[in-house]
Amino acid sequence: MGEHSGLRVIPGGRGEQQSRPEPLWREALGERLRALRLEQRSTLVDTAGRAGISPQYLSEVERGRKEPSSEMIAALAGALGTSLGDLVAQVAESMRRHAFVPTRAVVLGGQRQIAPASSAPIAPAPNAVLLAA
Image (cartoon, rainbow, N blue to C red; front, side, top):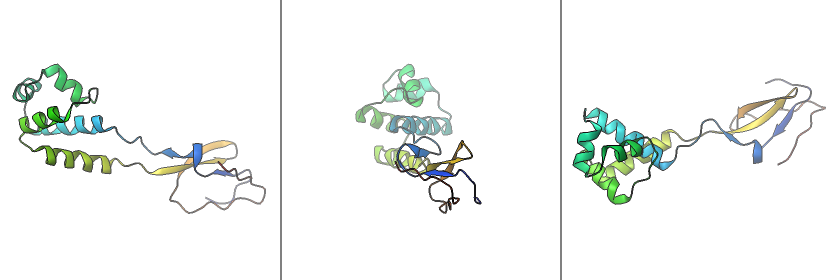
């Protein structure tokens, strides 16, 4: 970015945003459970039956709507042929891949834009106003 008159950089605070929202644990878990089930070409009914839960409950877990207990997660892991530890590690890795990149708000000529926080600092124009959070 070059010099712009009317440039205001708002570092941190309310200007900090995420490039994409970080998933909740239950959402990442649900995505991983569904992926494992589909890799095995197993139906909701079959997998739920092996885990001792209803297909409706499994569907809600896979969609990130329900947060199952650790015992239920272990049962689902077993039903999908993996261990609780391996499943948790896979979910953690998935969450790391979805990690967000902090950004900062930059106002150019009255229009708010988002720039990666890790980018080189923007040199303000001589008449620019820098705001602190």
